[in-house]
Image (tube, rainbow, N blue to C red):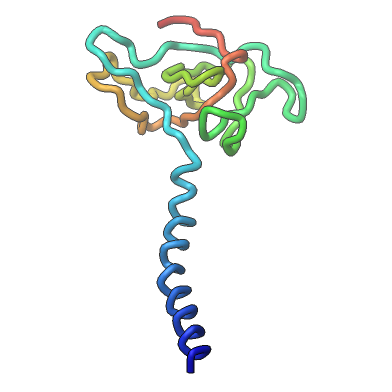
Length: 139
């Protein structure tokens, strides 16, 4: 009788814990991306104009990796090449949070100025790159 009770308790515990672990697994992708923040303030431009310069050669010649967060430990989400324009909006250590489009004529809808610091959720792509590959041009 006691062993049957233990088996039933174990099965019940597994049923109770299963949805919680599934919810954690579903939440993980959201946590694996760190949004680029736009700086807020009355007299502050939320982003500066930058350009990719002298990217390293390697697997993708002349390209740099764009990461989902401010570290090379995050997933690679895109690549950018020499001369690509970017908006530099955020800094964490040696990583820059950028907003960009592969179409140089596309408006990324960067407000000027932004009243409060907030994540960028505009029409363009965003991600993180190593600061050594970006030259700030204006801002």
